[in-house]
Image 1 (cartoon, rainbow, N blue to C red):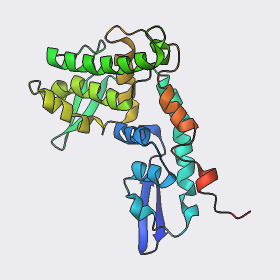
Image 2: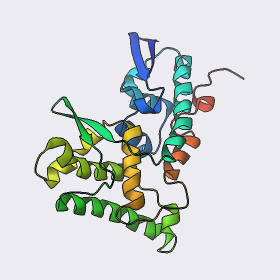
Image 3: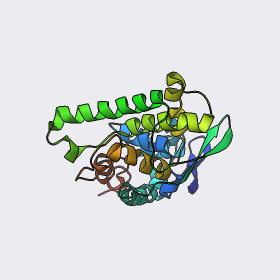
Length: 233
């Protein structure tokens, strides 16, 4: 983590953002992906949890430059995660404010039947949208499921394993709030496995997480050269 105390118009503000990808949660990554017009302060707010209104009160915009370097570093780290097929053996989630560790079984079969059908529907909906855009013959080449869909599938998969409860569709859907707190380095490889090989999906030729890589490369999350350059010509 990178921490810095910033001087504001009304005092001081402590800001802390991740510097390593294993410090970023799935929920934070979802928020970055789902924001269509993401500005510098929006990105810092998502990664730090500090409201944008508080960040706007910082006196010197140059104080944000250190955070720009951290975000750019994350953009380089993430491409290696998306190319990884390594699935974690265990996963820890928070249930009733207590950590619960569950085993991640190798075949990732979805149980019970209700969870299987719910996960199948999420995957089918993502495929349908891609077929509409790219056609039935080419959709696999461009298949890039959203992180929101990935989060839903993981919620259906882990709900019974983590809580020990009987499957309930509404409770499992609400379990996405717990899944969002999982580290992105743990969540994405598992979700990637579902969408690439379950149920019986062939591996696309293009990068699986191409959409989010484009998001970082285009500098939507942070573009210090445009927004944070306060020097005068």
